[in-house]
Structure formats: C-alpha cells, structure tokens
Image 1 (cartoon, protein in one colour):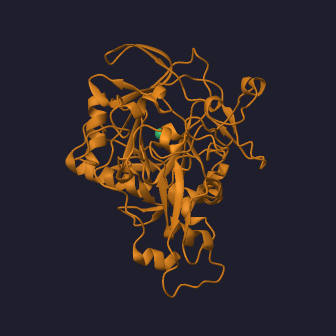
Image 2 (image 1 turned 90 degrees about the vertical axis):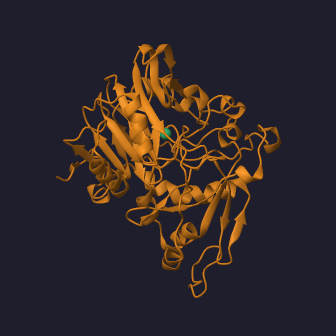
Length: 396
Ligand SMILES: [Fe+2]
C-alpha cells in the first residue's frame, strides 16, 4: 500500500497557491522502522515535496542517524565535520552544537539547561538569537511584547571541503509553549510575519528561482558561487542584515590570511541553482552569508542579448556587489506569503531536502524555556548537480 500523505497545515499568512507541491505530512508509518519499500517511497516524497512531517514519532538517536544515512548510504560524518578541529572551535556555529555521545552524528540543540539526556549529564543550550548576529537589534521593550527576527537564512553545510548534506532531520523532544511572536523584517518594507514561538521557517529554493524575472533567472542558471574558506570563521566578526538574509558589507570579515590554514582545492565553488534529483526542477540554493565571489558564464550561443545582464559573463569579486546581487535574487522568496513556519509539537519529526530549501531559526526564548531537539545531517558523498545545458538554454 502506498504511503499516505496529507498537505501541511499552512498558516493564514501563506499563499496556498505557492505551496501546492511544498511539504507533506506522512501518516501511518513509523519513521524509525521503515521497510525498504517504504523508505523508497519516502525518499521520492522528500525530493518531490522538500519537507516531510511525521507527528508523534518515537525516534531514538540511533534511528535518526540510520534514517538520515539511508538517503546517502556512503556518507558518514556530520555535515560540519569533526567538531574538534581548530576551524570548528573558532566557528560561530560551535556554541550551538552538542553531540549525543552514543551517536556523534546527532546533535542536541535547543534552549535552557537539559539534564540527563541521552548520556549527557548536563547540557546548557542556547537558542541562537539575532542579537548576537544582526547589525541592529529589536529593542528589549519590543521583544518583551513579542517582536523578533529571523536569525540566519541558510543551507546546512560546511561549505568548505565537505559537500552539502542532502537531507536534514529534526526531531522535537521538548517544545516549550508560549505566545506567538511577530517576526519583523525591519528593512523598510513593513513586512512582518506572525510566528509560533521558536518556529523553524522554511522557504522553497524552487519558488525562489521560479518567481525571478527572466533576466535574473538567466544569471542564476549561468552563475556559480565561490564560498569563503572556513566561512563560519571568516564571517565571525561581521554582522548581518535585519532580515537574516545577508551580511552587511562593512569590511569586518576576518582577512583570509588570518583564517585557520586553508587550501585552494578545498574551497567550494557551487552552482547557484541545483537540480532536483526527482523532479528535475531548479532550486536556487545559495548560503548568502558565506558567499564570497560569483562566477557568471557568458550567454550561450544563440541566446537573446536583449535586456541580458552580464551577457559576456563576469567574475564578481567585490563583496558588496556579490551580496547586493544575491540579495536582489533571494529577498523576494522570503516574503511573508512564501514562508512555511513550522509550529513544533513534541515528537514531531521533520525531514527536509537541504538541497531544495533554505531555512532559519526564528524567535527568542527566555532562559527558563527549555527546548530540546535532535538534529542530524551528513556531509554528502557527492556534490550538488547544477543545471543541464538544456536548462541553461531554456532560461539564459
Ligand atoms: Fe540549519
């Protein structure tokens, strides 16, 4: 019998016409004990819909690692690699990650202090806050009244040496209840989004590409991003835009010669659009904060040059120019109507196609609001596939 699914429940803020394919709740199967036939269906469903929800899942760290690995059986290490290296100790991601001792590929993330949890006696956790990352912050008074921000829109990926994970699994062990918050963009548009406390917000990389005007789709299919070496160390001293979608260009990034040792061959140069392995659709998959340079190919032979941007190709190395172009292409897709903010319940398991969506932590907890999640993703055994020559001819 085929695996049963129903559409995800969308909040009133979402435009349902933009979510016909995105997200499904899977019912009637145990995600910790899938038969090979069920897994094959789940794999197809995940790449078709980009996010799958299982409610009331009983799901151990061992089962989480096994299911995550099933999507990429030859991958082994956590998506950000070994936590003990010099580069990860200096990384801005380091304080957010605690490893489950029995299954080091599974991380404990959340807020407050968790005791006697899966072999961890005491785990002090801190929900990432825009206060430590954005250039400007919501006033404490507004925050007390429920105003908040997106933290950092991203793909789960080291973006140096390792390949971006295919799938991330997030399992909610403890979810504190609290009032809705209002996520403010604070970018002059007046945009804001009501969100459940501590939501994870998702946007579709396919929608991000689909809604672009033609001249920017043309750039997107011709472009590759060169990421900074050790990007999370590099961006450490810098501050982000109020939407969490970019770094402010103030020259604060760590100079390349002050980073932990790096080599050219480990730098990641990845296509801007990644081809979905099941649907063949193109997803705009760029980690905006980690991007360093853009390499744009010339228009293919025979393509119209009318209104074309960079018809002869370009290598953009001015960081502000790189960021401004990416922001212009990515900002439309984080409009309130295009966001799926998941309303977490305990024992929710969400699988998301990390090569098909962008996501962000949202909101702020008080220290006594204890939240515990298990997260797993694995550095992939292969690099993302970009557009085919046919795709380039179609969109360029
Ligand atoms: Fe993430």
